[in-house]
Every structure is written in structure tokens, then in C-alpha cells.
Length: 52
Image 1 (tube, rainbow, N blue to C red):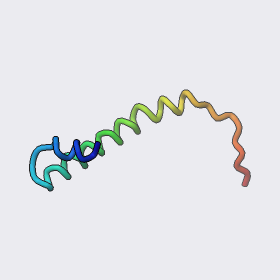
Image 2: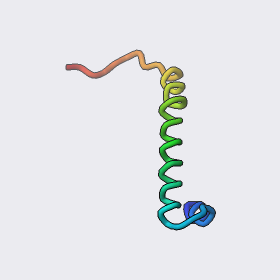
Image 3: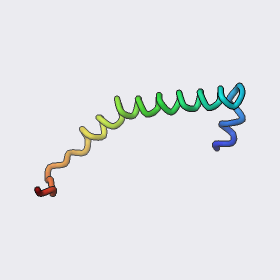
């Protein structure tokens, strides 16, 4: 899968690295802004087992 993605991307090595870095940043940002808060709201933890 990664080899196919690498072949599809245009440009030289540094352009491919820049595209993949930007894509990873976008995916991480979308996960932090939308997916993780929705999962957090769906999974309600009522009991906390951490004692001090």
C-alpha cells in the first residue's frame, strides 16, 4: 500500500516527503478536532480507579 502511494505521488523525493507530511498533519488535525471528541462523548467513563 505504501509503495503504491509513493509511486502515485508526483515530484521528487523532497516534494513527496512534503506532501506526505502535510497530509499527515491534516489527518491528525481532523482526528483531534472531530473524531476524538465524538468518541469521548460516546464513551462515558463514570468510575475513576486512580487513587492518590
